[in-house]
Amino acid sequence: MSKILDVRSYTEEVLRAAQALRDPAAQEVVRDAEAKIAEAAAVVRAGGIVAFPTETVYGLGADAFSEPALKKIYAAKGRPSDNPSIVHIARASDLGLLAREYTPGVVKLADAFWPGPLTIIVEKRAEVPAAVSGRLSTVGVRLPDDPVALALIRMAGTPVAAPSANLSGRPSPTRAADVIADLDGKADVILAGADSRIGIESTVVDMTATPPQILRPGYLSAADLAAGLDAEVVLDPALLAETGEPKGDGSPFGSLTPRSPGMKYRHYAPKAEMVVLEGDRDRVEREALRLKALNERIGRRVGVLLFEASDFTGAAHDFYARLRDLDASGVDLILAGALPQENDLGFSVMNRMMKAAGYHVIRV
Ligand code: TXA
Ligand code: MG
Image (cartoon, rainbow, N blue to C red):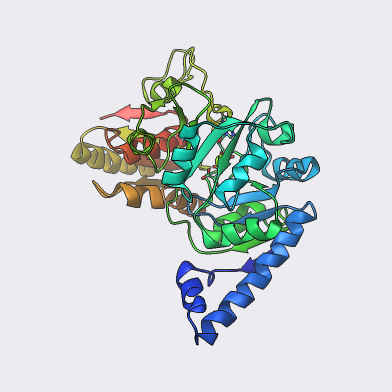
């Protein structure tokens, strides 16, 4: 059993209210939640592992400088040890604890997008343990935009390394209940907060590359980053290969190996078989219904996953939660409608959807 601490009330609104004079109710709520977060922070300091909310997805965190604590995370998730973890900080100046050096471009990005859904890859200091960075000479750093996450990191007094708080290979958790389903009994503490506001993981940008390269697409697009940097930002070519035709060996990459190690594993996958239907929206809907009926006739339970036509933020917010709900409903097959990838957020959601479906696509 993990210790589950409810911190849903620790929101920006209640923090603001508590700062105003004469709101003792809000102050009481804040004191109560901060006592719980302090308890979780003490567990981090003592080498334990703590699941916590962020604005992207929930993370499973440990002291980034404790090799044994990091090993506990990998064991709890069943995660391959060559897949590096993102390190979370609570103030931008703490980047210096992790980065050996950083360019003016890094400062520009941090100024423009932190706190927020951006992970910046920089050359790491020697003190950053290999368990954080795999065999790489770099480390990914993020300043999240979530009051519980920030309070936890601040109170822990150390950067917090945290991959997403799911069992390896499963859809990322965007709700406390999803974290509990995967990690109860494995994490020492689960901070149960609100649903993640964004719903897909941070954009990972490699600032050691010239020009800077996006290794994992996320809520922030290449165009967003280019605007913040006032310079060109490109996509890792492997990302484009991924969403194209699978190559002969069934691998979508062909000779392109993704530079973000985590991108090469089967990922985000529901238990059910999953197929992506791609094409004109009306045709996708008709084909989904036809395939559903066909499969039901042979006794298979079928779930259909379609998002509102142009609501990309809604699709990002709901994607992982819908996969988990469909799994919980016991379907054998999920038929998912592709989103248009010309839209940047559509592209980011499709990056997850294609992986979840093991690149199984039907063009309709
Ligand atoms: O939004 C997020 O980023 C969430 C929350 C918890 O912050 N975290 C997250 O972590 O998604 P994780 O471990 O599930 O994904 C981290 C991704 C992996 O694909 C990993 O390979 C890549 O970032 N990554 C981490 N450090 C890297 C590095 N130094 N170089 C290249 N890729 C790196
Ligand atoms: Mg993950």
